[in-house]
Every structure is written in C-alpha cells, then in structure tokens.
Amino acid sequence: MRDILVIKDPEVAKLLADKTRRDILRLLSIRELSPCQIAKVLNKNVSSIAHHLRRLEEAGLVELCGTRVKGNVVEKYYRAAARRFIVSFSLWEAGSGAPAAEWLNDVVYSVVKALPSFGFEVRGSEEAVAERIKTLLVRRQLALERVAARQRETVPNACALSVLLEVVSLMMLMRDEEFLGALEWLRGAIVEGERGG
Image (cartoon, rainbow, N blue to C red; front, side, top):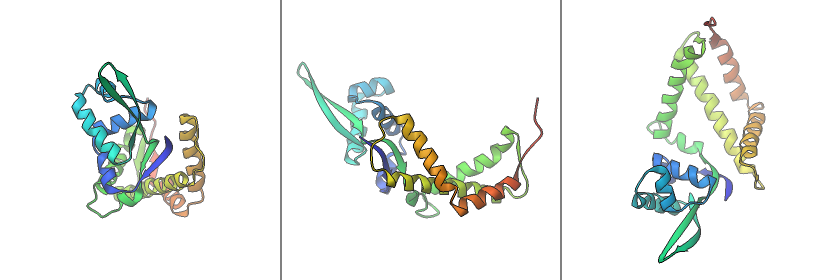
C-alpha cells in the first residue's frame, strides 16, 4: 500500500462522490477486509459492496490482497491502494461548471457566513473575502500535491504521515507569495469581534 495516491483522472474522482465508496476506502486504508466484513460494518448488503469494490478495483483504488477458504467458499480480502487519496487540483478547475469547482465555491461562501459563529466579523466585501479564502485553499491543495509528488519512501506511521504532510506543506506555503498575500489581506478583512460570555 502506498502512502499517498493523487487522483488525476476525472472518472476515478467521480467514484469518490459516492459516500459508500469513500467509507469502503476509509475502512480498507485501516485494515484488510472481505466484502462480507465491509457489509456488516456499513450495514449494507454484500452484493452492493461487491459492486462498489469491483468499481474501486478497476480504478486502481483498492487491490485484492489475499483469499481465505472457509468450507466451500473462497473469501476475497481487499485493501486500499493508498492510506490517503488526494484529488488533484487540476480536476477542481476543469471549468466553471465542474462539480468540484461548484463544491469549492459553496464551501468558501459557507465559511464566510459562518465566521460570526466563531466570533469573527467581515469588514468589507464578503465576495472578496470568499475569493481570498478560496486562494488559501487552492494554494494549500497545490502545496499538498507537490509534497505528495516528492515522496521517496513509505512512512510507516499513519499519524506521522499526516503531520509530515501538514508541516512540509506549510513550509512550502510560507514561500508562496500568492498564499501569503491572500493571508495578509484577510488579516485586515476578518476581525475578532467582541467576546461573548
């Protein structure tokens, strides 16, 4: 199993739109499981899980890692092809109508609207704040992809991998003028409101 798999194929990325498939990948990134075991954990029928596994295997996101014979039945066991999957930013900007681009816009505007929930206020244009937040997210995603592309050896500890990706991505972002410019602009546009009791 690889540590990181960057998904650049839009058809493969579409497979991740399904919650059941994402749940299967999460389970299989933790341990090897059979379709019956996955079905029990997710409270789904085995035929549905087998269908999803076939699609994920064809896309290279899961792999058959073994079989076990139980009586007359040969049970297949699967694992995720990677511990972490990253959908490439190149798919996010595939056009203004791209689902990922629409999702990103929805998230960014939700963030702007939710700032008061954490005691922050927006000074000026919410649209401008949303655009700067989007810049931060996009630049962070690109840094993460660059870090993933640099990996030379497997990191045995999953927690260490997550921390390492975060730290090295942040180091890259500290040299990214576009990221730093958006962050500095936001410092003046998002202010801490009065503290509630």
